[in-house]
Image (cartoon, rainbow, N blue to C red):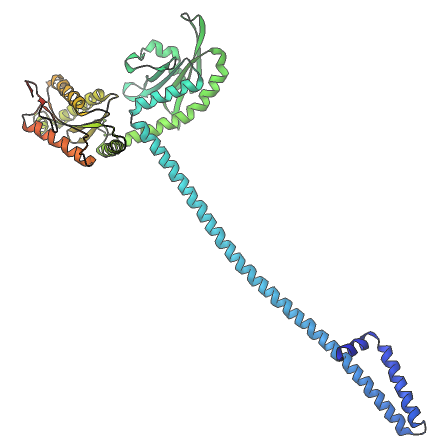
Length: 444
């Protein structure tokens, strides 16, 4: 009711003035004009009414002010709450951003690890067949990709005045064997590969193929990494494809240089500095890989352990420098004997090993004894040019169904090697077999 009355006072003040005047006349008419008390009472009564109305107006204004103040306080409270919410949300968002940044960094690190693992896996896969096999595979893939008549991969040999030597050659889609590679200087100069390495750019030379009555061309580009020349890539194709071949070679050379460089660095890390054979740690890796493959697919393989007979006495007699030279020459012969059939390792000291994937016990035995005969007949050169002779004792072990793990295979080969030494040295023994060979006779 008061709110309604205050609203009326606020909206129609003239109405209340009229009411007041009417009331005044009513009181006067009731009491008469002659009575002053009646007039005074009417005036007081009207003043009271007016005062009440004024108080109502003041009350309305006061309530309006209180409502405005309350609204301001409410608004301030809301603003403070919003600020608190914003600060909380900001903290939460900052935390989420930090977590997101950390997740991104973790993903980046994981990608780098995966990339590194992929590179290492690819390098190790390449090394399973050795550098030459890897280069041959690259050359064959390039010949298919470029649809070229020939693809030749050259590497620089630091031991031969940095001369280029062909390491892989594909002709008409077929890989040439090592013995069929042309290494003559005249042919090398025809390819213009040395010029490509010297000038650091693609070199081309056209020629007429009389056998096919058509023109051909050599396209050679250097293979390098970080400004260091590693070799050259030569493609033989129709000279009309000059622009296409040149562009393709420029795109290929960089990635090929990086891959060969990584391969060389990895191979250097697992290669013994003296003998150039693979180190013992890499032997363990390859042995475990082959044994795992044997367990999964029953792919047989063999292990040959060999020791130079009386090598300590040899060193005492001829000196350690001569002993190291003989050790290096034996290692070179071992690498040559392994070829594409297996891998040679320096196991420790004068002891070396062969791993022969896909070779059973009998074939490994024949391989080992053939190598023993090679060493026996080989004439080693001493420090002063004197002729020297050494012999080997060898032990052979192969995978069998009862083989527990790779360590047992090593133990078996070591036992066979011990039997060779105990039997008089310069012998080949195979674990679990009664037959062995020595220089004088064959025992059955």
